[in-house]
Length: 139
Length: 380
Image (cartoon, rainbow over all chains, first blue to last red; front, side, top):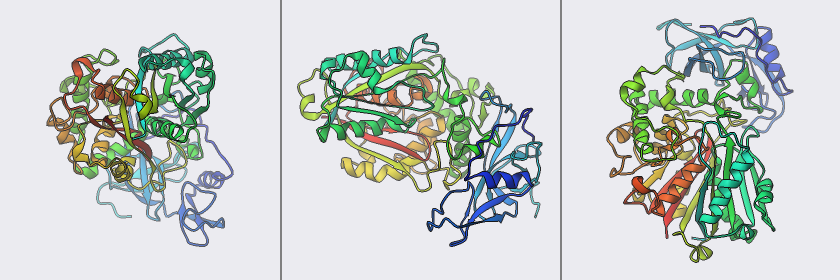
């Protein structure tokens, strides 16, 4: 299910998160990885909360995850460009971080389902999309 | 016990006040001062909280009230996590000698002005939400509720139980903004706002103000109202609590909120156990938040909160009457300041037709998700 966004959502890019959204624009889902301890972060933090390091690399995520939770927005809840109905998922990536994504799904999503990153899933590349795999599908 | 709550004040709760926030704040604070048997000259501390710049500063309220020697002023940028926490800070100000009589208030045009439910929250985590339209507070609590119901084996039936129980209380509360009857059919026939929430699962946003007055237990003895003792206060932001009020990507467990994390401190500081509570005023911006609070505070076991409510255990005469004003769901969304005020009025025996018989030991909570505060209030 696509979100009905007919104008581009304003996204608050800052020096901490710019690399993440630049990656999405190229069709890549990137975590910020701490080079000292290997911790992968989304959101991208300015310092590793586990070891305190500020040296990072960009780490390509596999794009495979499971659905931790989801909501279905049934109506317009604010004055932004987003009109319901659409579903948003909290996706737990195989590598550990969680992301928020628009869910593309036949019928209702359900917790625990396998989901997969859809590169360039929307006209606005910052609009992260995941498809909910049919039951039993193996990546 | 070193601090006590001695006065309560409100401005009318409305859908469109047609008034300034300052005017409503001053009315509620003035009412709390008068209720405590004091005058504005005696007030020397004022504390409040706001989100999205929706309130007025403590100093402005002091200015209009004519407070002459404001010695403690605090404007906390925090949402519904704040009320119990601010009572604790007021108590600290009093015991440290910074102030003697501290007003704590919340005031906002929460319905006719900026509505929290329709305002995206700024902050370091905002971009990740804006990119996918995750931009309403209702979505955040719904995201937690969905996982909570799944993991604890509960369902929308359990959410409905909360909505019904609290509406029954609201029908005995003239202040409540939602007083019309609610039936299961009404609930099931209504359409989703954001699944799993229907309208009756969501708080009713209002315009209004509410204030309480805090002083020392010693001074409280000379004042007209029965003092309400602040036995313990706890605040907690759990591990990886996030980058702002709406960011929970780092938080791992959407089935347990801050109440699970502060519970042990809260009871230990008050030297009581959950079994000794006589009633509860649990923050309930959504139905699921009340259930999560009952479980987090150890009042019920995990996954048992919905059945507890459905069985009448939070109704009058039940094991633990809860949200006796109708809660934020039905009385109105004053961000938990009214939750505190209701606890005070119950302990003082001033709740009229909804007055509880067992009213001497209460737990109050403030907040819904990663961080929040709570307190134990008792009769003296």
